[in-house]
Image 1 (spheres, rainbow, N blue to C red):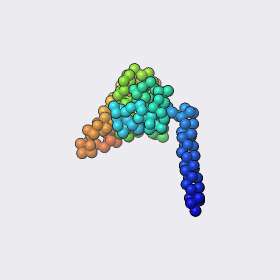
Image 2 (cartoon, helix red, strand yellow):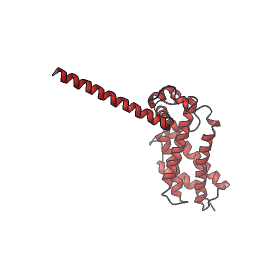
Image 3 (tube, rainbow, N blue to C red):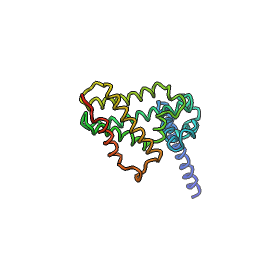
Image 4 (cartoon, helix red, strand yellow):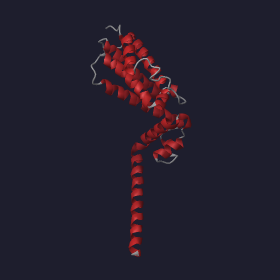
Length: 224
């Protein structure tokens, strides 16, 4: 009986060791195939949302991603470089959400203008720390060509929606002005939301009412 128990114990121990090492091998294989950078960015995003960028360390991101503390430096120069990558990915997600939300809506419609505002504000509420990063909470952010390029792409998309609203596919000065007005409003509204400055009791309108009202005011006199 003792021999049976001993054999069972050894077998269970061996099985556990095999499973544990198989998991580790699988993890290392994923990283070997280029997944490490994405894993580190996602780990950093989670930590930024939980603790804020000021309390983040590269070693924390490495531990959460399940790699050595030296591994991040194969892809990122330092903490700020890692934070800029999180900001860049955030801008990309916001842009993708905007495109997907607008896709089923009629081209050139007011609904598309309003929907852009909803995506912008909702993204800020869902990922407030990342949203802040997208607007410069990492050193060197203002000189990062990738971030600047991503921002221009998103803003260009908003400008095109303004042009299409008036029946054109050519962006003109009036579209640039309207896009800036729309962005200024939703940007301010987003920060009011994530800073806790706007409650249901203080807000005289719902988010939908606010966004539709400002969209109609800004786009009201648009002409082709």
